[in-house]
Image: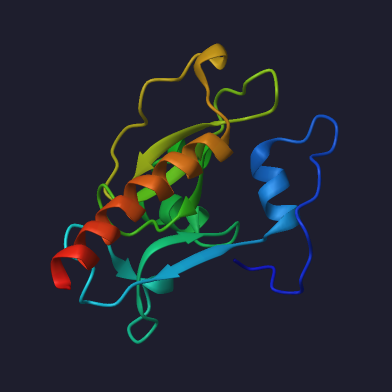
Length: 154
């Protein structure tokens, strides 16, 4: 977690989305994995930089330059996305879709990769899950894979 100063988990502020809460309390997450347990995990180089280490989870608010991709591709629709996880690989990266927002201020989480030609269908505001729910499900799925790999390796 990005917040290593011993801060305890705080209560959400009134009207604060789970993404804003996450940024305020934790800042970022990077989960590095060893190649002995990475089988089946969606790994990529941290920060898309050689030597940065293999990660299966990298979440931050400054992780990807979507403006650079829009400029390079000319696809202005991509400006509606805010990449918060990875960004360089199909089925391993995720973004918030800013075209719609739930009544609690949450944005839909959508798969993302640099070769996107079109945005996914808009998620109706009532169907948007909080970022915290998405994060819990995603981390639980990754943990299950890593635990199975550890059991097989023993």
